[in-house]
Image (cartoon, rainbow, N blue to C red; front, side):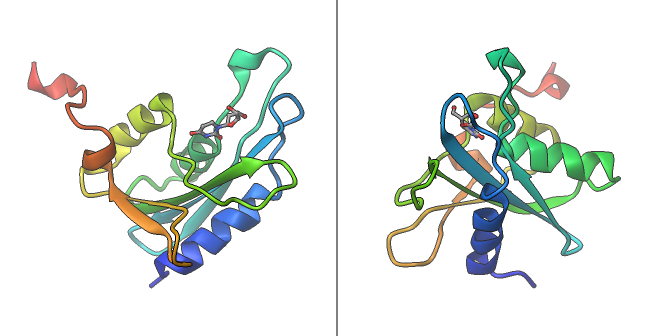
Length: 136
Ligand code: THU
């Protein structure tokens, strides 16, 4: 089993590969599958800004394209390029929406915490009242 702390460390590793020459804000993500695999992601920017991909979606799309779509948790870290993350970098709205496609409400989201341990949230907490096409 991958601990929260270890998953967050892997997000820090993933962040080293962030491609962010426009915002200079580097983000890393580590996505844990229910079978214990970890997919890493970083933000990948583009000179046409709308084509930028967030770290979370990079990790999720890598996993889905590799045939994995049962997810347990994701650790996310972000800060200005060259600085160590010192506060939470919560996922953007688009990434939260993408999470709802594959993840249950209890899916765990691990962000920077104050005591050396990542702080844990659930998808239901950070995206209440989510859009669910199957309800119509
Ligand atoms: N970014 C992410 O990677 N994840 C988020 O959830 C928020 C924003 C990236 C996108 C862009 O490269 C940079 O952070 C600044 O917005």
